Image 1 (cartoon, one colour):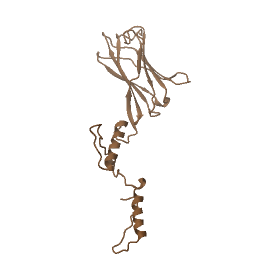
Image 2: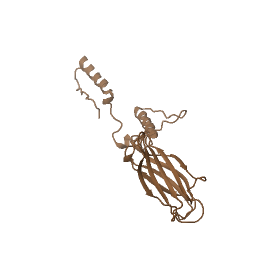
Image 3: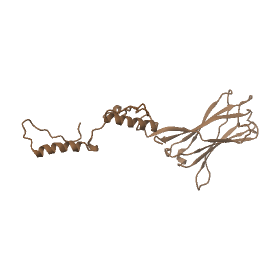
Image 4: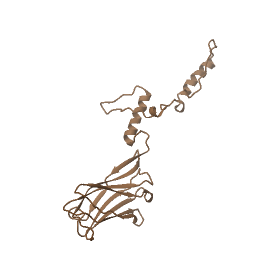
Amino acid sequence: MPLVSITTRADGETLTAAKYNSDRNEIVAGLDPPLIEDYSDTATEMRLVTDPGEVGTESLAGTLAGELERIRFILKERGGGAQWYTSNVTRTATGSFSINSTDGTWQSSGTTLAFYRFHVPDGWVAGTDIFLFYMRRAATGAGTTARMTVQVLRHRDNAAVSTLASADINFVPADEQNHLGSIQVNGGSLAVGDFINIQITRLGDDGSDNLPAVAPDGHYFQWTGIASR
């Protein structure tokens, strides 16, 4: 329905200059952006998008509705969400990794430390948890258990290092295949700009540790971010 009032004229009514000008002003007023009718009568209509194409293969809009659909498409594409108006999306990135062994594995003797580091980015949704997903694999030989622990450390400008969590994460594989593990970092203890340092230590000299070398075969961090960033 129109968002402006339309005057109805009766058959035989005398047209005066005042009436004529008033009717034309109604049309002009109806072109004011707050009074132009929407293109979101239903959720289905609100979600309509059209790919504008690329340079040389443009899809040209023939109507204002078509222009809106193409703008929505770009918003959806850049935001990465299910719809063009999605607020938050799941994002992933690889942080830095280092390990204090000569062959890049958690070794079977001594103490081996691996460090997974991540910078809490702009666009992270405050208070939501951040996860480290990492691969471990029995690199060589037979055995049942690699004795391992994890510490989650937070580094913040002008503040002492804070330990957010610590736990045992022993590796007990039944084969030499890759196995995906995850470590959850409490988002309530973080702020944009913090550095997360997740330290996974193998206690190779522990009496219950009898597995040869363990290989770290990959990792990524996952967090909830604002769709546009």
